[in-house]
Structures are given as C-alpha cells and as structure tokens.
Length: 415
Length: 107
Ligand SMILES: Cc1cc2nc3c(=O)[nH]c(=O)nc-3n(C[C@H](O)[C@H](O)[C@H](O)COP(=O)(O)OP(=O)(O)OC[C@H]3O[C@@H](n4cnc5c(N)ncnc54)[C@H](O)[C@@H]3O)c2cc1C
Ligand SMILES: [Zn+2]
Image (cartoon, rainbow over all chains, first blue to last red; front, side, top):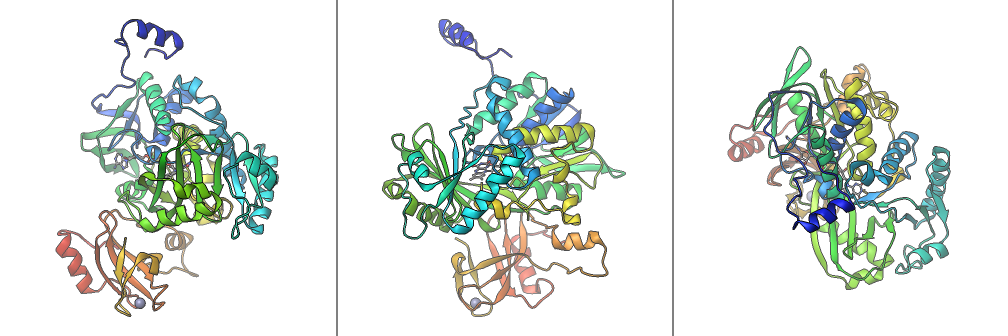
C-alpha cells in the first residue's frame, strides 16, 4: 500500500496519475480464517482493523452481501457527538469521538472529520432541565459540553427563529467538539487499512447459514461457498435478527426504516449541527451546501430500505417553524436505511449462547458516531472472548438482569 | 404508505390512522417461570425478514386492537384479523401460503 501524502500527489501529478493503486484487494475467500466478521459496514471494518492493530489477529475476513459501506454506514446523516447521559454510553461514544479526532492521520485516509460543534435545542422546560442535567453528567464523565442561553444560540445559528410561537428556543446543550465526518470515507479508510494488513474483504457474498457443532461455531455458508472460522462476529445492523436466527438464537431487536433527505445546495448558512428533539428533526449543512435533514423512524418492522412518506413530511414540517428559510428549498434526494432498535436505545456488544459467536448491533439510529469506539471495544471482545471495560455494560445479559442503559429518554430524537 | 383494513369497523385505514403495537401472539410468561422464559417474553423478538404477525390499533378510528399478517421484505399485506385469537386463523394462513409457497409457521 502506498501512503497518501502531498508527495504522493505531486509524484502522481508528474506521471499523469498512472501510479495510484486500488485502495483494497478483492480476493476470493480462503477455506478458513481465525475470525470471520459478517457485515462490511463501519462497525465490522473497524472491528477487523483493531483486531489487527491492537491484538495482532490478522487472519481475518470481512464478508459483505452488497458493497462495503452500502448499508447504514453509507446512508446516515453523519452526526458525531458523545453528550449522552449514562456513564457506559458516554464512555464508548467519547472513546469513538476522540478516535475520530485523529482518524484521518491514523488511517492515512481523509475522513473529513469536522468538529464544527453541535447544539441540542431545548424547546420545552422539561428539555431545559434534562439538558442541564446532561451537562452536569458530562462534566463528571469528562465529556466537554455546556449549557448556552438563547442569545448565544442566535449568535451561533443566525438562520434560526428562536422566538417561534409554539416551540421557542429556551437554550441549548452545546458540544463544541461534536460535528460530522464523511461517512463513505470512514468505511473506505478502515477497509484500506484492513486490506493493507492482509485481511480479506469479500463483497457481493451473502452469508446464508451458520454451522455449529457441540455449541461451538464451525463456520458459515455463503453464496461463494463454505468458510470455516474459529470465531464469528455478526455486525450486520438491521439484519442482526436474520443472522441470529441462522445461529439459533433471538435478539431483543426490531428492524425499522429510518429516512433522511437533502436539499438543493445553497450558500454556507449553517456551520454547526442542530438537533431539535421536541419537534423531532435535525439539520446540518454539507460541504457541498446541501441541507442534510433527518427525523424519526417508522413504527413498524421493515426490511425494504424504504420508509413512509408521512415521516418525511412530519420532519420537514417540524423544522420549518425553527428554520423558516427551509420552506423555500427544493429537496433533492430522500432515502432510507434499516436500523436495529433495542428497547433501551443502547447497543449490544456481547457474547451469545453459541461459543465463538459475538454480536455487535443495536446501534439503531445513532451508530455512525460510534464506529471507531465500537470497533475498538468489539475487537477486544472477540480477541479475548470476554468484554473489556468499554463493552462490559452492553452485554445481552443486561435485559435479563434489568440493567438497562436507558438513553431513550435522554436522546429523544433518532440519530 | 401502509394500508390495513380494520377487521372491526371495516375501514381501509392508512398508516397515520393506526398505531403499531409490535409482534403478535407472544406467549405470556410471568411469576412461576424462569428468568430466561420471562426474558424471552419481554425482550426477544422474531423480527423476521418475511412473513410477520403484528399488533395494530385503529387509534384514530374505532380505537380497537387487531392483528395483521404482513411481509417485512416487500411490505405486502396478507390480511388482518381480530386480536381475540392466540394464533393466525386458517384463512390468513391460506392467504400466506398462496403467496409464499413452502412457507412454514414457526413457533
Ligand atoms: C437515515 C439514517 C440516518 C442516520 N443518521 C445518523 C447520524 O446522524 N449519526 C449517527 O451516529 N448514526 C446515524 N445513523 C445510524 C448509523 O448509520 C448506523 O448505526 C451505523 O451506520 C451502523 O453501522 P454498521 O456497520 O453496524 O451497519 P451497516 O453499515 O448497515 O453494515 C452492515 C452490513 O451488513 C451487511 N449484511 C447484512 N446481512 C448480511 C448477510 N447475510 N451476509 C453478508 N452481509 C450482510 C449489509 O449489507 C451491510 O453492509 C443513521 C442511520 C440512518 C439509516
Ligand atoms: Zn376500526
């Protein structure tokens, strides 16, 4: 793998860009691997990457039924934050956020991390109290957030109507180092790093069965044949229940559609990320100038990557009171992804009833921000067979024991 | 847009009239059962990619609960039936088999 650098760009410029190599190899699957990871989304690829980098396990394959990054990783609105309420969440999301700070350098791939700052608007008194509480919790957790008053909100976001009749802006929770990153680049950067370590990323290869003997995983069946493995990590987001079914257990997960949309590009007018949980919408402006808009999930199980029109309408309607200028914009594209929802809105990183099988799922509407931290924690779990401190609280056993990590009240809006 | 016919009032209701209520035909486990059985009942879900039975309420109509058989992979609706039953009735099963030959109802 040649390193990307200013010298590489200069060298290639002098030879008509004839020397660039493919960013990753596309090999045929081998007969057996130490670890097979199902799902080449951000979480699967990051898991593979840190298995190699942190634990020296490199005989690894990542199996993907479509193209890498084509699942939710390539469909999300790229918001990154770590201002969660509960300690285990703050720990893993802040680990991820802090890894994002240097991810471009670490991967030698520009993931365009943009810590432009993030606001969660308080538009009811209940939210004011809730976010003030979160600021205190974050202070104890070592996550930098602050409470800001409406006047400061207006300075940061001039296009906002803070005196709306129905939902006036009463202040905001501000995380100055929250922001966005380029979603595809995160998947591509990790894929390139994995390939450089000699791992196999196998695309267009669907896992169709899991082979188990004596309660221990033996391998998988795929559309490209059988592959043996000693350990198997299922990292397939919205398809987690389908893979679990193949392995003979059930998960506390429901798969639902979550949609997003972007407007025509306009001149720069919004340089922070704004989330409005009461009206259930959020907004940022991409580098191309498009307004990137997201909202809530549908309420019913769905695997079609297609959501209901009413949710798009609801989201846009909600945001227009707070951002009146949006009413003049044409919307260019709208799409959906299938998100894996747990009851407490927290992820699952866990051992399973089958020996050698591990799951990483339940990130639901908000796992893009977590990719580096999740991969880090998952690699530790797979390598050692036991969770480290970051993953310990996110086991499947928390449901039986009633140890929920309840972020559904704290997070409000989906992402 | 999802359209389900309410088996109580016969209205072809679209999604905004309806409130989803999750997986149907769950077997209740309470006192006297193991923690694992209770956990299954409370949290574990089939969440299938394909034929799915689920609860709905005609929230902005007659207000009653009913059940629907739907395909989560295509959004096709096989039929709806009253909630007063512990399993899908024969006509619903027949409608599913007609559209999905070889489909087996799991437990
Ligand atoms: C519209 C939308 C907006 C979002 N906005 C945000 C946001 O602003 N911020 C944020 O933090 N998060 C957001 N999210 C959530 C975030 O996208 C996800 O939590 C995250 O991308 C999940 O990554 P993953 O790697 O687990 O899953 P995915 O990227 O979905 O990868 C799973 C992969 O598994 C593959 N797979 C499935 N079944 C099989 C099989 N049988 N065999 C082989 N491969 C298989 C799939 O093809 C897929 O590529 C959003 C999601 C959506 C849909
Ligand atoms: Zn009715």
